[in-house]
Image: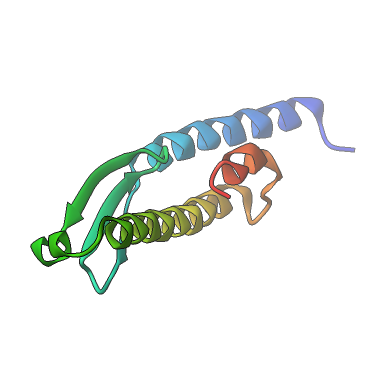
Length: 108
């Protein structure tokens, strides 16, 4: 049977790693694109949209087309963020998603 103090020590180390990972996740930035790079969005690790870039050529298109391309670029960024977040969490948890289950669900 493992020593209780060893278990506590391991739990504290894991907790510290989780805190470090959460801070690292906040610093992640991803770029979502659509329309052949006509629309680009930048999203941070907290899921906040930081920037939208729209090529001038799109301004001649209908409002609906531009709106659809913005949504598509956002969804692309969201997908990339989910993938990156999952990769970072896996490094800490050894592939176990249970510890950060709520964080992962936030990006679904």
